[in-house]
Image 1: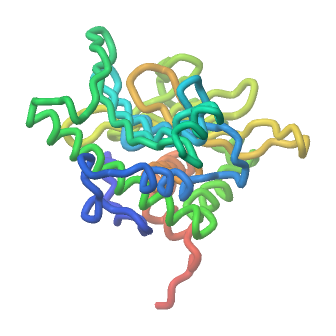
Image 2 (image 1 turned 180 degrees about the vertical axis):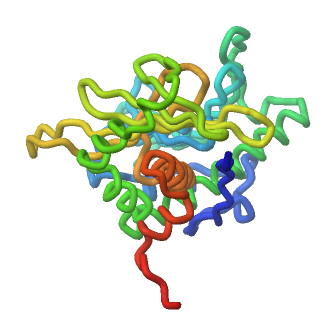
Length: 304
């Protein structure tokens, strides 16, 4: 049985990368705000949050979060049941009378970088500058570099019209989903239950379906070390404005059944999702995955 083994080139990147990362120790609030602005999905300055996924780790992009102490912009990287790294710029809320007395025209801004453990063993929040464990500070610095790589990939997608998402959007049509979940191969296999899904293993890929209320295809896979990797749910959901079903892609980052929307700028995951879908489509239609890739390409009949 052929195994799924994605060997995909890194997507294009823009503005940010691990090699050009500003160290956490010298990061200023202007740089943080600039990075947040580059990931804006709307032109609104209202408070909002966007959750992306860097591997199996969530990345919350915070834009103009307002609280008693002021307004925050930044990023929160969470590693499930391990720890959380928060990198934020804060514009402190100061009454105008105090600004006048202090001869300031604008509130003071500050960079706040914190670390805390999460899960069963929780710890108090500690500022990065107050950490004395050199190995821990190195790990957080590496996380920040990886986050810069992630942001660079996301920026390229946003600046170029999100081509990876558009490619998937064209493939996940209601008609295609209906055909996949009703593929005869499901009737030929002994199906395993996985929450609302039922499916079978093909090599190292678990292909599962769910019909009501909308046709959905779930794809999970194991790497060469037999570790379960983040999986994806391809479905179509009602669009309130257009009164029709529109493509939707969700990520299942961990073994638990919880799943979350995948963003249009989550470049690496969109790559993996498309590659997995081509593999599964080959299994469900009886064609080999390379042939499916060729048929779905921009030039289905290459010159001989």
